[in-house]
Image (cartoon, rainbow, N blue to C red; front, top):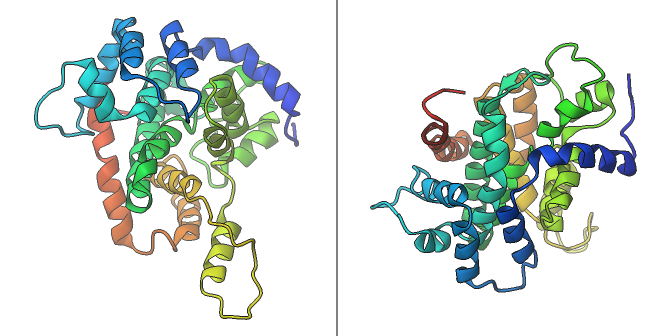
Length: 311
């Protein structure tokens, strides 16, 4: 069995061979091209024109904005009103996810032993959870968290092509240890690195690419150093450069682990070990209860999209 990661060049080639199956539509690609520069202010009229050029995409955006996620007092039927309500980051994420959600929802993900709808539900739960956590700490980055959470596992959709000639021994989930480690041992590549490369193909920001590629990386040492520096006394040695730790990757990881626990994607023991690493951010059970309240809205949203077929 493979025991090491494939080289970046090999991963790139694998993604190129598989990415056409998830390639964004021409309208979505135009949207990505138009909004690829975060510092460039894009007129909403141009976004509306792109969405209206593909009725199915416009309908999907309206469906999302009218879902239980936003709990609006009255339905929105005008795409021009939907865009500011969702925010550009969410519009981009939803446009990207439309194709692979529609594809994944109809399939069995045999390599992982889960239904496609479970995969979709996990992505949406993670998006809602990460956005909620980020809003508590940095409200202006809520949309970034939603995007990263929604797309964090896109690499899983490419792994079937990676292993098609290797044969599937038994499903990888539920796992009692890190999924990426199992993938690397069995196939020589993991879904996180595949997802990061696919994100670069889709011209997502470098930050989003990094979060997708590293969402299974142990954050414990960074959290510990930040906490110790915060409470250090004058004269104590500084354990890390006095730079603020970007909390967005942690919010995605917390939401990811909580959703995995809810959907029984990983064993309870594995999840408890993972979640203990975030005690500085989520100190008690009430914190997790509030987070799961946000995630509870995901199932109703998916039901409205794909019918009342449970995950």
